[in-house]
Image: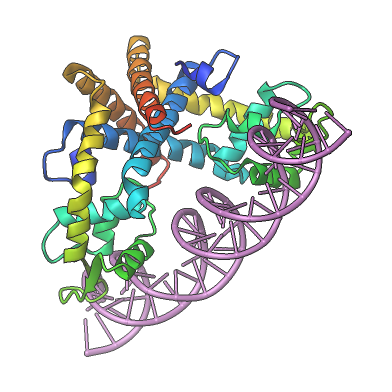
Amino acid sequence: MHIQEELQITKPLEPGHEVALALLLTREYVARLFEEGLYEPEGLSDQQFNVLRILKGGPKDGYLVKDIRCRMIYRFADVPRLVNRLEARGLVKRCENPADRRGSRVQITAKGLALEAKMHGRHQALCQQVDRCLQAEERVTLLALLERLRNDHRSQLEALGKP
Amino acid sequence: MHIQEELQITKPLEPGHEVALALLLTREYVARLFEEGLYEPEGLSDQQFNVLRILKGGPKDGYLVKDIRCRMIYRFADVPRLVNRLEARGLVKRCENPADRRGSRVQITAKGLALEAKMHGRHQALCQQVDRCLQAEERVTLLALLERLRNDHRSQLEALGKP
DNA sequence: CTTGATTGCATGGTGAAACACCTATTCTCT
DNA sequence: AGAGAATAGGTGTTTCACCATGCAATCAAG
């Protein structure tokens, strides 16, 4: 189903507009797939799950808040409060950071690891489902084109002095 | 810059996971480009601008709320309140709908048309900027691959009975 | 060492989103 | 025509995101 059909647009679209719409729209589908299939059943938000995964893959003494933030997909995430909510559920804890006492180290707890492990299988299944309709070569192409878009936009944003 | 590098992920990624991350991340770049370059300077949200464009492209007597909703990128948008905010700024007005008095027709006002016209040029420029780094053939490829992902996910969602 | 600047984080307040619920109107079927 | 189901959309409430502010710790320069 084409974009025009899906959004019931009658006018012809500018080429770039079509690309932008396709990105936004496809992202909605994928996000919704993970939301309904993985996050919502566990009462987690996508960002919360992302934090758990980041911590699980990180060093044993945890990460500072800023280290979490720069690994998140959404760069302006309100990480302190995300950590608060995870901490309130016992999935995460804060420890003092002797090296720099301005920040505390955020560590994943055993309960957090258990939840991540529980969700891991379904996460992988959803990832495979995303990938299933692409051939290996198509995936490479898609990733390369998306990367080109990102690099182009990053240079544009940097040219405007945005971090 | 690869995804691993950008998100500082050390482990190798599952193929599908990489596709999903690339989509989410690239969408963030594009959304941010439009946000900073177009929406934020006018004090509109992306959804509000989307409503303005939908109304501008629609029939002269406007759309019902549900007609707006099904044309939005985000399908669960809280359209009544979006319209409230636009109405409070005088960009949009509600009129009675004699044919079916359950719903009112939402029309764009002259002020709304003027604002859309003011933003139109920059919107086109940003669209072209998105497209600039793609050759015509690459754009076709990218659109086709994204469409394949959407179609696949739509059938999955429908199989789960989700609208 | 001490002063000023910077970094890292927490928090307060405002506004919007997400969820459900409620009302009014229309449709359907007998 | 009338009763129940379905549709359209408004509203209430809680939660969350975003902005700015404030504080504590560190760094840099003299």
